[in-house]
Length: 359
Image (cartoon, rainbow, N blue to C red; front, side, top):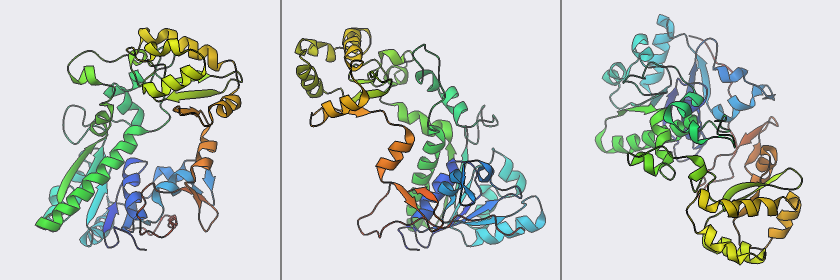
């Protein structure tokens, strides 16, 4: 397989979401990725729904990799992993802090034999500090970081997020760090150690909503935030048929167009007011207005108007319309990578690996 990362060899000891997402993005660009699984396999293999013999989850995060099964607690398994590392450029692991050291494969041990290795460790709260040993998946990171409090429903109760953002931010940040380290190694000949804490990768994504808190002030309330429900032109509205639409651009040019076409240009000053209570009358007016027609009627009404507007679709419809869903040779479906280069051939998903040999 060709690609920007052809010739790069990756040993992936991670499971579930963050590490596999990092390494599948490398595999999609031609890197050779060896997925090392414990005897029980990556738990994602057992997470339904299933299609063409594999979990949809597992397939979309592990296509194009080679899978091997090793019991790293045995001498044979450890020896086999050392053999794999000998030819590797990158090692990615997602164990809790201290596990790799107990197994004899911490960065110091690996770098002593292979100083060019780029070693990326992904954990919930980092390799050191008071939370290092605390177990957590994505929802726990949201909660500990304070973001779940902003992900609240109309009654103020936090709701479970629809996307595992801290898992994904860890994978994306880890990928960026690995590529930076590989560029650095090309100059110095030495690898590096990367400590990726899911919490640390998620919090920088809040810069546009967390200004007061970042500056040492109080936590923001979503109802007063311009991007979280306090602004009339960045909000969700119910239609007559129970479906929803959104206004998704706060620029005054959009407000001027919509309010003018609705015959209420007098409300434009409210769109320029601070988000929160000052915009409440405008939010109320728009809620009443959108409730008078069905979603389909509003889609037709907005056609050709220069207003940032969208219907709220279900995920199946959104995927179908995106053009990103690709079928492989087995008839199974993949979400294609978002990264495209001008000289790329049409992307084709790699083969989903069965559990490999044991050692």
